[in-house]
Structure formats: C-alpha cells, structure tokens
Amino acid sequence: MPASLSAVVFLVALVSSLLGTDSAPAGGGVTREARPGTGHSPVSFSTSGYHGGVQQDFRWSGTVPTGGWVRIKGVHGSIRAEGTTGREVEVTAVRHAGRHGSLSSVRIEAVRGTDGVTICAVYPTPSGSAVPNRCVPGEEWRVDNRDNDVEVRFVVRIPRGVHFMGKTTNGEIDARSLQADATVSTVNGNVTVSADGVVEAATVNGSIEATTGQANPGRDLRFTTVNGDITLQLPSTFRGRVDASLLNGEISSVFPLQVRRRRPVGQEASGDIGSGGRKLHLETVNGRIRIRRAGG
Image (cartoon, rainbow, N blue to C red; front, side):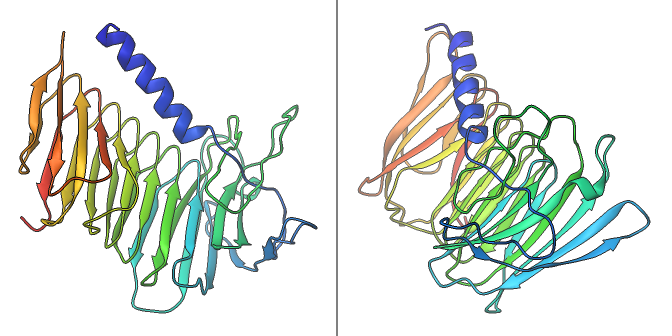
C-alpha cells in the first residue's frame, strides 16, 4: 500500500477509535436521577452560577473504591488530573463561553456506575438527531455538539488505587502522578500522562509524553498520534514486545531494539524489552518516537 494511503487509513482508524463510541445525557438540575432498569446511581453536585457572565463552576466529591474508575468525558476544553493523598475524588470544572452556544446550554453530569463514577460535559442534542446526547457510565462516549463551542475545563484529584480515564476532543490532557492505571485520549491537543500503573494515550494533532510505572502490564498498550512526537518512559524492569512505526521522523530507544527503514519512507522498530511480554504499540505519521528509561 502506498505510504500516503497508509497514512490516510491510519488517520481514519485513529479518529474513529477516539470518537466512535457511546455517549452522554441531558438531564438537568442538581441531582442526576437514575433511570429505571439502568442501575445508575444518582449523584448530586452543586454549581456556583455565573462569574462576570463568562464562566460557571461545577464541583463534585465522593469516594470511589480501590480498583474503581473515575472517567471524565469532554468535548471542548482541557482535562487536568493529579494524584492526591486524600480519600475522596475531587472534580471541579469551569465553563467558558465560545462563539456559539450559551453557558447554560451545556450541563455537567455525574453518574455512578458499578465500577466508579463518570462525569460528562453534556451538550444540547441538535434537532433531528436520532440519538440524544447523554452521560452513561463506562468508557463509551459519543456526543453531537454541532456548532456549540462552549469550553469545559476539568480539574480532577484522584486517591491512590483509583484508575483514571480522560477523553476530550479539542483540548490538551495533563494527568500526572496518578497512583493507579490511566487511559487518556484527545483529538486536537497534546497529552502528558504519568502513573504508577498501566498507561495508554492517544491523540491526532498533538504530541504524547507518557510514563508508565507498571513493569509487567497485563494487556497490550497503545500510544498513537498522527501529527506529533511520542516520548515514552518505561521502568528499567519493564517487559514487553515493541512494535513502533512512523512515516516522517526518527525512532530512538535506550532499550535494544531493531530499527529499520520502511519503503519508500519511514522507519519501524521491533524487539523485546526484558524477557518480552504483551505488545507495546507506538505509531505516528509526522513526528519522532523516543523510548526512554524512567528516571534516566
């Protein structure tokens, strides 16, 4: 397959994987009502109202059991997450007006699920849309915001042992010093993520800087972008099988890997780190791939 066509196929697949998923609600008020038969627990939150007519605050705090998940789902706006020594998850968000759509048209909803809490920025469902925008627990996230460009910027503090997932479309993600697993993705924005557990990251237009603390992940890990660099830091005792490729850029690694030229353009690298193990997939089109030793 020609290199240009390969890049297009990769781009389509990556955007589909980032955007083609489930979705979020419409519901209003301070308490999210559980729908009959869904098993969703109601979660209450408070908003502080407008500040100068340009922003509105959201706050939620509560406990999530060890091994549970905090999932943040946005569309426009950044997500920042960090570890905390406290026992409660804390989430704040600020809405900023864009050129289209009012602040009050975008709700922020918190929904309890069987494995944690999901918090979404829910945009009004466009007329004629077959599926309403709604917030549901779990990984899936599909929302049609049409021309509404109100920004919602999330800040999350997560206790030890609680996993984190962050998804947005237009905005950067900065998740550092997390104390469990982390999975993050955006479309337009850089991604920075570091965690004691397993880490995965994806974007389309942006670079990735990731640090994983888990030396022996129990699943395959993916780090993908189209226009941007990927820098991955691994513990010195990491075990895995590397599969890396790019079209325009260079691959470098402190771990012994076989780096080869691709025809007609690009590079690819493969090989085992440590005694091998699950696949470690890194892919970009325009950018560098660098695999480093954490703390080195």
